[in-house]
Length: 350
Length: 111
Image 1 (tube, rainbow over the protein chains, first blue to last red):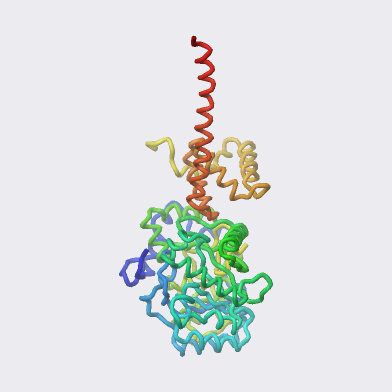
Image 2: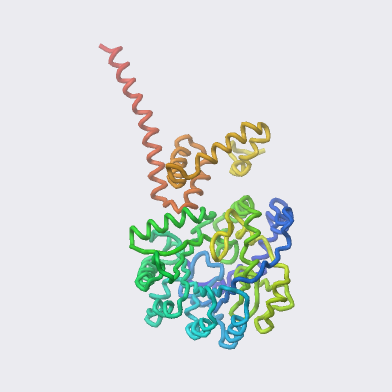
């Protein structure tokens, strides 16, 4: 289990350009169709926005964990963090946006020192669905975070948390030793406040992504298995399970190459390509805002440094009408969102 | 020319068997797909049965496919290995039960 980010390790794959180079060469030169070619076959290229529904704001890449497959390459050594000035620009946008969902992510967004202030301010706008992507262990990581469940309740936050598996071994292998027990404890605390309970309005959803070089199964059956195991073993409730495919970028790309699984995985993604998923991929209803205010089609494009193809590229110049009139930037990593039932930060898309 | 009888890439082209016999191939794949749908048994249970049988019939393609399918479904390695043992036990039992035939024949022919 790595304890440092690729960036800190000075790994070549910390460079987004190197990742994009790998994704555009090799098997994509003569064996497999590029994403653009595949989407063009069904006349769905270029991808265009369908209308903004979700503003996803990345508050910084710092995290208390160093997960094996993190597409952000997040960790304790990452210092990129959103400033108050950028947060204020985000708040101005939140007041006027047509989006119904605000989605705070990271890193561990709670580690931004201004996280609570930002949640308080953003909640005043009365946005319909206010998501915080919490890794669960942050709640147990330090005393100053112990009251997060109460804080989330106070602001009626919709908690979305990663949980790789219902067994200790699989979870700890992907996310680090001790993560499973801390996550279980955090989930129980959230349940005690009403999060995830069957009749409760306090939403608690879990996110599952495979712990290896394979694609996820269907969301409904995974949800059933997760619910059964977590209820029987730990009396834990949650509302929905979002099943997410690992995209071949950052640490997961590093793992695929190191384990000699890269080509097979890309074949699997291309074989599982589903044109129906293309209609609902998240880049068509989402804008991703980075810690330093740049705008992207999605969180993955953010990590690859692929800014939106629009005159408006930064939160300081935000204009939703102009942004909605753009072509979405794609590369071969996008096959991850169109495989099988499709994949997004809200799980399957078909 | 491949130097081995089995090529992992052949699994990816399994569907092409319909090229030489469309009707039978399609009937097989329809049947196959239907068998593995959720029914009285869950798709998860069927995946474990398929994994066990894959070992018994010693099909490397099937072992690849159903190990991957098991991983997708969140099946643990302990569950997978137990399924393989269940298959192996039946297979070895099927061999050993023929020992009764041997014993009977032996006794009949011996004084």
